Length: 110
Image 1 (spheres, rainbow, N blue to C red):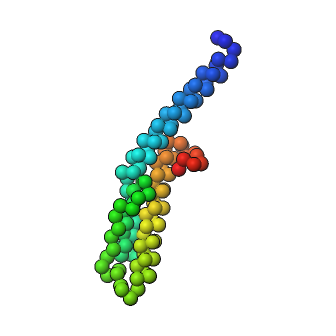
Image 2: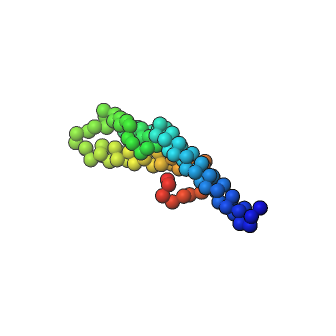
Image 3: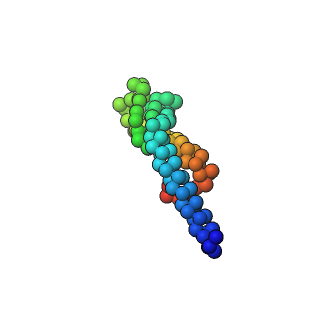
């Protein structure tokens, strides 16, 4: 064995592992797009469904939540439900990615 080749073999193995992790992360991100979370505000007066790609898929407003005299309250409920939905979706993505990285946070990836 030529001196130094063992280190090169380790480097190749590390590169293969990094490539595999990158492929698994891309697959996990794609799968997250099909997963959804639900969030509500105002005791269910406003309900949203958000996917793992941070897209608002559904917005449901109970008729009694739409008081023409208090539109500001309805706006606040909608914002609260959407923000909670996005927070839950981000938690979902973080949990899925955490399975791949063993909980290691990799800045810029998720």
